[in-house]
Length: 429
Ligand code: 4AD
Ligand code: MG
Image: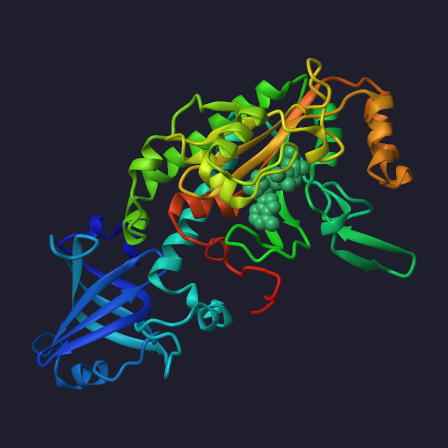
C-alpha cells in the first residue's frame, strides 16, 4: 500500500492508493482524476485504451469524494504539482458519493463552517491541519529535549486564572459550580515546585465575546513553567521555542506552505534574539503614530499590528503596568507599578502569540493582590501554600497554538487552524 506523500519512492512501479476522488476533468479519451488519501493529492491519469470501455465510462460518472482504490504506475512529471502522476490501470469504488456539497467553486465562509466536517477534506484545510500537527510536535519535541516534564493540569477548575469576566461555568453535580480552565498556569506553578521545569498542553477556554480573527472560545495552549527562573529566562525560552517551531515547519512542510502560497521570507527571518521593547517604549511608538492609546491601557489588535511592523521578527514587549495584567505578576523591583510580564507579538498582524512573565513569589503581596482583584481567597489557599512552603522566583508563559499556526500558515483567521473551531456564535458541527 502506497501513500501519496511518499510516492517518489515508488517511481516506475505499480502502486495501490486508497483514497477519495477530489476532482475530475475529462477530455474524450482521458480522465484526469485528482485523488487524495489524507497524506496528499495526486493526479491519476486514466485512458480509455489502458482500462477498457466499461471502467472508463464508470469513471466518467464518479461523484466528488467517492472513496476509491486506484492502481497504476507512478510516473515522474515535472509539471505535476507534487512532481508525480499515476497512470491508472485499475479502479474500484469503495463508497459512493453523490452531490457533495463543497464544490470547486467559491463558497461563503459560513457555508463552509457549517460543513466543517467536510471542509477539512479540501486542499487548503488539509495543508493547515498538517502544519498544526507539525507545530504541536515541534513544541513537544523542543520542551522534551530541554528537560521539561509534561504534567497535565485540570480542565474543571474551582476558580479563575485570567480574570473572572471570561469564565465558562459548568454545573458540577449539585454541590458546586466548576469553571472550564482559562489556563493551566496556577497548577503549573505547583508542578514546577515539584518537578522543576514543567509544561502543560491542552485546551483552554475563554468566554470572550470578541469576534476578531484572533479569538476562539476554545483554544490550545502550551504553557512551560520553570522554578528558579526570572522574566528574562521566560523570554529566552519563548524565543527559542518559537524559533524551533518555525524552523521545523519550514523544514518539513514546504509542500503545505506552497499549497497555502505562504511567503517564506518573513518566517525565514525568525532568529534569536528577538527585539525587546518596554511597555513604556511601546506606548511612545504608538502615540507617535497617533494611535489613541492611554498610558496604562492594554494594547488592542491594531496596536499590536503596528508595533510588530517595526521589526522583521517577533518582538517581546515587557514590563506592562501591573494594573493592566493578571493578579499573579511579580512587580518590577525598580518600578513596582510595573509587572515583570511579557507579550510576544508576531509579525504581519498576527498579534500576541505568547503571554507570560515572572510570578509573584511573596505570600503577603500575593494575598493582597487576590483581595484587590476580588478573588475568593478560599479557592486560592492551595496556591498560597506554594508561597508558604519554599517559595522561589519562577516564571513561564503560554503560547497559543492556533495563533502560531495562523501566522506560520499566513491564514487570515484562527478559525481555520483548529479542526472544529468554537466561537461566540459557533458550537457546531
Ligand atoms: O496571555 P494569556 O491570556 O496568558 C495566560 O493565560 C497565562 N496564564 C499563560 C501563562 O503564563 N502560563 O494567553 C496566552 C496565549 C496568548 O498569547 C495567545 O496566543 C493565546 O494564549 N490566546 C488565545 N488564542 C486564541 N483565542 C483566544 N481567545 C486566546 N486568548 C489567548
Ligand atoms: Mg495575554
